[in-house]
Length: 122
Length: 144
Image (cartoon, rainbow over all chains, first blue to last red; front, top):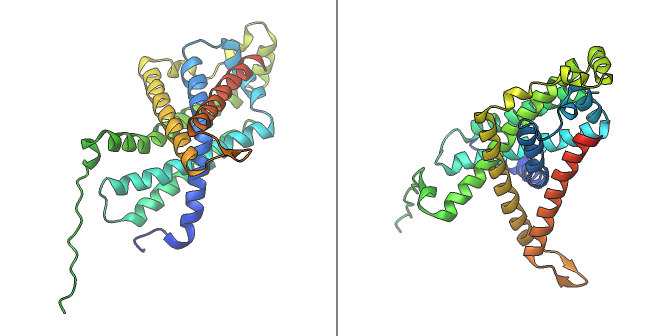
C-alpha cells in the first residue's frame, strides 16, 4: 500500500465531501444536540412528543429521512477527513494509508448503519 | 558539487499546547469527534422507535397519556454524565460552527449589488440560520 490513500484521484472528492459535511454540521449539529440530547432528556420537551409513535410520525416522510441521512453521512465523512489529518498533525509518520482506510471505512460503516436505522422508520 | 542534505523535520506531538491559536485549532479538529458521537447517540434512540411504534404503540398513542408507555430509552440520556457529555459536545459543535462560518466568510466572500458583504454579517447570518434550525426542530418535535 502506498503512503497515501490514492492521494491524486480521491483527494478532491474527499475535500469536497469534507466541506459539505462541515457546512451542514455547522448549521444543524448544535440544534440536533440541543433538542435530542439536552432538552429532551432533561424533560424540557413534553414526554408525548418524544414517544415512539410521535417520533415515528415525525421521521416517516422520505424527505425528512433522506435529509437526516445526508446530514449524518456527510458529518461522518467530515469527521473521518478531519480526524485523519489531526492524527497526522499529532506526529504520525507511518501507516498513513492504514489510518485513511480506518477513518473512511468507519465513516462508511456508520453511514450504512444510519441508512438501516432510517429505513426502518419508513 | 556536494549534494544537498535535508535535516529531518521533527515536531513534538504536543506542539499545539504552547500557543492559544494552535490549541483552538486542535480543539476545532477534535469537534467532529463529539458531533459524530452525538449523532450515534441520536441514531441509537431512533433505532428504538420502530419497535415502540408498532400496533401497540399506535393504539396507546390514541389514549390520552398512553404514548408515554412507548417512550424510547430517554432515561439513559438523562443521567448527569450523559447530559454533561451533551453540553460539552454542544460547546464543541458551536466552536465548529463559528470557526467554519468565519472560514467561509474569508474563502467565499459575498457581494451584493457589487459591494462586498462584511464577513461579520455573513457569520452572524449563518449563526442566525443555525439558531433558526434549532428553533424549527424543537417546534417540529413538539407540534407536528
